[in-house]
Picture 1 (cartoon, rainbow, N blue to C red):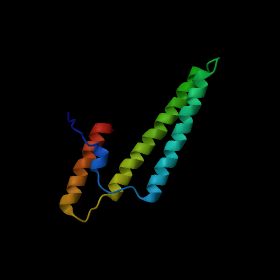
Picture 2: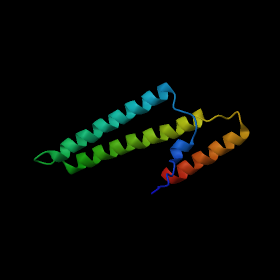
Picture 3: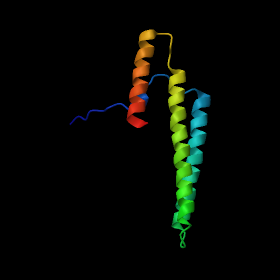
Length: 103
């Protein structure tokens, strides 16, 4: 039995993350993870926290994750090679598909 693997549009954008870019994204994601854990603790309390506070914290985590995603796209554009016109055009098309699918 074979299963077709559809590559993620993110993996279609060539050019690996640079070390500083990778560290920045991982740092941002770790902060989001901390925010999510804080939200879980608020909800898990025997006396539930103020729902407005929980909603506010969820929104903050969501915005932080959205910002990380936008930064990832920015890095993809920065790392794409503009030297080869045909290759650059393909990169632009892949990035456009990525934006259409996930943004």
